[in-house]
Image 1 (cartoon, rainbow, N blue to C red):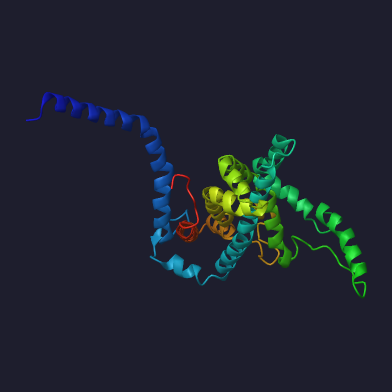
Image 2 (image 1 turned 90 degrees about the vertical axis):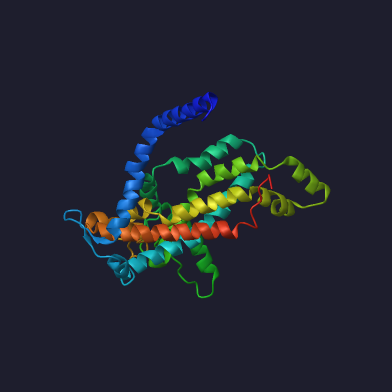
Length: 314
């Protein structure tokens, strides 16, 4: 027979569990209704022919088979992967470089940090409208600044060729670089995270490196980057997720992904399939493929980083 003390302890534990579940129940209900149910439902609908207006009809893996014979899906997936492969490393390098410069104690440091972070606060639709005019081939600010320089270069070349500024959003060759340039402009969020990580790098490590005669580049390579490696990994993973889910800006610039579908991304095709063509099952299958790509790339990044990420407690 259990002792009275043990019985009272067991009753108290049950009351604590009940009270704890009661207090977290709003969150559990919200998680179940707005997260778990949509995830399970989307997986089920990915196995169905479902147009929203008609009952779902189970077709097994038919949507997935159709996707890999769909040229538009393959085109949008290719565009997404190419964009991510260019914008992700460039964004990491630019944001890390800006953070290192802002961490040098230059005057008006807080002002610079605010300026670089502001683009991250601007709504994506507003950013797209602004850059739509910046990239305008005839009247855009960017080409107005580039054309005089191209004229000088052309006069210096043999034959005096006429060099013209690119049609950023009207030329398939330049449309993706234009979006990459826009992405590099909005790295303020990553810069702030890097700056926070740089404040935690132990000063004594820099002092020891200086005593050993390490140059500035050697201190960056052997002290700053290893100490900052967890932050770099975090920004890298968030960059994978963000670049593969790129939607608002290209959709505002061109809902059809023009020119020649060169900026038609997987998220745009998913949106059109679900809400324009009402092929919700087909769109759900696309969403799960996108999830699997992000999941696999994230696991791969974590696995490859095991030997290169330094945690201070290790």
